[in-house]
Image 1 (cartoon, rainbow, N blue to C red):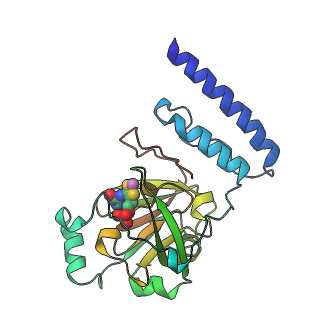
Image 2: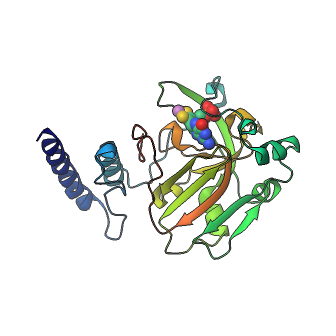
Length: 244
Ligand SMILES: Nc1nc2c(c(=O)[nH]1)N[C@H]1C(S)=C(S)[C@@H](COP(=O)(O)O)O[C@H]1N2
Ligand SMILES: [Mo]
């Protein structure tokens, strides 16, 4: 019974916020419900997603800082996939000279990009604050190619709805197109003016400034445009949508 009550209260909240979203959003914008809607374990997604999509319309920029604000930066989660992944160990031993980022799925021009290939595309620098769910924050400068530029280069198809990331330490996660095409969403290969260190995700990691730290997936092996949402989350404590 208690469960039912929680559901109906959540539904009331979502309905109210969707109405607000509908009023604020232009016709043709993304549906104001997260793809995880309906999963009781991911209830947190509903409020943050609906509120963000309604109020921010996906275009507000995260604050950018000055060089003087750059802080020390802890490394968490996996800090060297070479311990569990032979392919990564081999690529690392050669300073990632043989690394190629695969970009595929719903794109007209699937391909793979070496680090020099990525560096030839447009690059963006940003000094931003990282917020980890464990309770710490840190500021660093990141350099990389905007994910939108990369997706455009690969010829993202109109049927694409989600961008899925696969990492060398076997993380799989996805973001929607609003976040993927956000101007500060970059595939980073540099940190604080240097090559991205191993503990921070070498050779390339995502910087997703609109969401909490664990969505900025490190050690990216493959990026895939998809027309369907797959909820890869195995641990229900980690919401799919964690906008900040
Ligand atoms: N592939 C992968 N990506 C990951 C993680 C990880 O363990 N593996 N940890 C996440 C978490 S919880 C955080 S806070 C940041 C940590 O980034 P940092 O190690 O550069 O501080 O990366 C995120 N991305
Ligand atoms: Mo984190």
